[in-house]
Amino acid sequence: MRAWTVLVSVVALLAAGCSDTSGDGGTSPPDGTATSDSTSEPAPEPTGAESTQPRENKPSVEIATLPIGPGAEANQPDDQAKQCVGVSLTGLELPQGATVTYREPTLSQDVAYFEIDQSACGGQSPECTGHQIRSGDTPACFAGVRQVTNAEGHHATLIITADATCATAEDCTALKPGGISQIGFDSRALGGPKPSETPETPVETPAETPSDG
Image 1 (cartoon, rainbow, N blue to C red):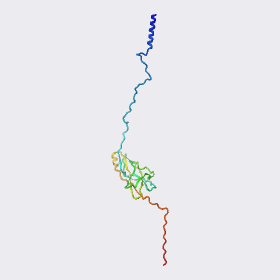
Image 2 (cartoon, rainbow, N blue to C red):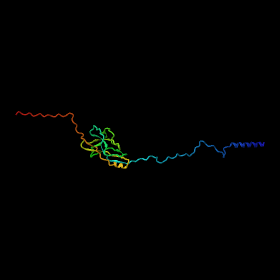
Image 3 (cartoon, rainbow, N blue to C red):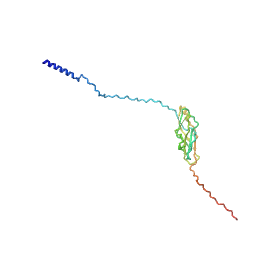
Image 4 (cartoon, one colour):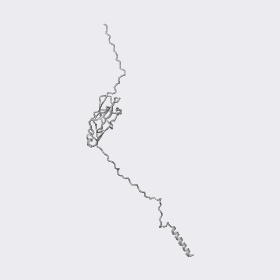
């Protein structure tokens, strides 16, 4: 009976040992849902300037007065106070690679007899402001003025300043002196009395009759 009791105790101990897998020496399976507290930072973007093609800075110069003369024939407005003129480059040869851009025309005059008024050209194009010419390509442009005095016999000269870019600094130096404007406007007599629609009939004076005596 004692031997049977000992055998039962041994079997019970073995069964208990096999069922205990959570002891200090055991390992737990990894948790599939666990996440790490540390997250990887994105790679920093490069701070250096992007590589671009270097800009080509061409030499440039201001031409105070372009040598200009009458160019394309301009249609004249019905308003006698307004005048339009075609403007062409004269006596200045542009070097290869040069571009000349016209600024807004101005007037050289003692007193304000005229003012720039592009409406005098009635839409004839191109207008001179912003007009560009190049070597071998110098088309005319149109500029208009309006007379602001009723007196005749006063003169104003059209002046066009321009900006030029050149292939070389030497080319710009050659363009800088510019030239002389040969375009001018003369004021007309405006505001005079209008002729009467019906001419006046001259009053006839009776002829004297000779006396008999």
